[in-house]
Image (cartoon, rainbow, N blue to C red; front, side, top):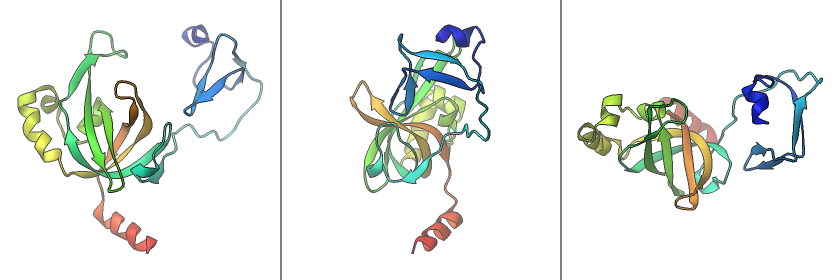
Length: 180
């Protein structure tokens, strides 16, 4: 199956038929017994962007994509790792603990998403520059958008953050007024 993609036989946007696949945590999985081939079907208007539901952390579950309004209550030092995407380069991750008033959860951000918290590359790469910024992050309230998965090291649910948005207070007030 991987060779079909590596050889360019299957590309993004192709319509395929899959048999003997399975779905786990919202992902399609193929085994040695699975088959994947080009389809003659034409599918129009396919939505390719991920759909996120707004909600509370208490409603989070494995594989769910959500947009959560939460406060940063704890930050950890950035960690560097060998990048799988860019050989020879280091990737960076940052762990946070988020709380939305219903629950708290460990969350992880990678690469450019860390900068969406207001951190520069220099602040991310130097502990001397990161530590003062770390204190400023505590208590920050933002929208965190991502997917919930199992952290295999701690064997618990965590949020893999794919985007961070500042809160527009005027829009939030209007939204809350509409709910009343």
